[in-house]
Image 1 (cartoon, rainbow, N blue to C red):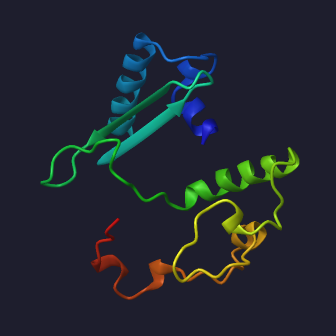
Image 2: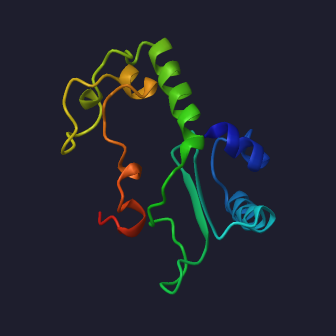
Length: 144
């Protein structure tokens, strides 16, 4: 994700901390990206080495009002490669193994068996049900 953020927001490449000026610049850049890419909604966040965070959202949620950074948004398939790259980096650093089970890092989920490895998730061989194939997927609202 940092690669995309770095390309979309080149101002952050050398920054170690968030300043008010940088925050304003990033917010304006996000609004410009929304317009240039002709998307209805866009949200982004940048975590800086000093622990400061910039986050912003642009767009409307139908009749419910403006999009905020608290709204949950589905991340599509374009993020898979970034997640895989980060996991492989963590393995190279000795922080995890692809043979570790997913429950060593996340809380137990209903209907997801234990023993599924990170490798299986990355290879799409875990057997976890693909909820997007459910016939009612597009008609249901997920309550969190």
